Length: 217
Length: 382
Image (cartoon, rainbow over all chains, first blue to last red; front, side, top):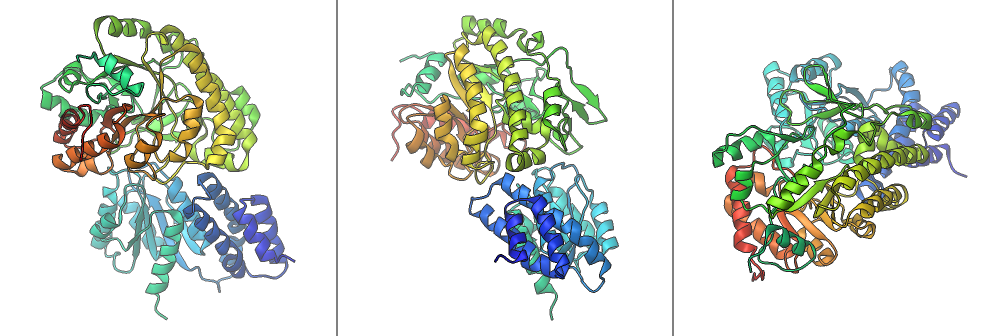
């Protein structure tokens, strides 16, 4: 007898948005909390998707489809979580693609995977100037700023953004993560970012690691 | 033996050893140089002539004859035009809408025009695809001047001639549908994806047919494109490629083969190792740009495994060596790729993809100098 949480997890892995929505509603009807649903069905589901992506069993189509399916669950659950003030997200993230850069698929995947890990994500979209990142970090009291760039010409804006954060006094209490095709671990270190990941699954894991390490019990 | 440039290329593509490895620069829109970088190359050769853009989206420049001759480039390209009935329409300060209704922007600081609006993105139905208005393939804009240019090259030069054809199906449908929806369709709505692929391949085949009717008999190589790889693997699983894309590719390549006996050159970025046997099956003779830094694409893998069945066009690493290496490292790179690709013929040397801003001009020169130094047959390397 498959539990509702297993059913939901499988639906995420299978990329079946309708089944995900249905199973999520069933789980809620059975009295399961949104938090439990995230932690025991959605997150394991997306973790498995990430594992399959890294094992080259899943390619971009399958990953995007699962991410979309996952989104249909979080659309049901997020309003409930927002209402119940007792449940805090794992952390608050501001994410966006740097100024002059119009690429966003990878960044969108990262945003979805972060939501699956129970982060509250504010996605600023593409072509985001440093000032806009800082403004949003301030307004949302973000724990993490995740910056994406796909071009070697625009990735310099990551450096500029971090410098601007420092000048504005927001760098110290913030975790800054960077990613995108031209970004390397070396570059990330050179510009003083806290972390870098090569793909969405890695980014979500890294965010979780960095935030749990920061918040000392 | 004093070979003409054309003989050298044709024999190399026929997997015969010749006098030296042939060189490429500028015969396709994917194997030339970015217009900004080209200014430096022009300056170093003292060329002041006006520029021509080969490809607006990628900002690829045509290379002037004095430079091609100085570098002893063996190939010359002939490019189709755009439909007269659908000229580009400016959009905002930094964008344009093309013949298919796709809108792109080049924001300040960017080097290329990037996709911003796709006419078939979002929640569409098969009816929307059926109703989509394609340009007329018989529009004279596509073929104007092609035969004249081909005849000129044939009669007045001894260069190998590359005739550019439209992309097969992937590029066209990604631009129309948008990348995200394109991938989602493949995973979740194969009927819709298939309908779009069929419509696109029908259009591209019709345009290719028009171009080949005026030039298929005069070209040595016909070049098409479809990006199937990313840095770490194919864009879609090989199983999905074979089920959903390969039948459409087959239709396109069968059309090409009907109208020309030229070598078929396929441009595909990324890690396509897992699809190479499929491309061979479709009749592809040449692979470009050979993104050697991508997964499973190193020349030491591709050369031995595929060298007898495929020719490799490109192969000099542009992700690390050309932009960031010393001239010595560039020469070592050329030596290495020649060692892997050139024995038995089947290698045309050039950068992986268009040479980008930031590549030191000395490295471009060093690449071709090393090509001369290490590319003499027989290839002897310890």
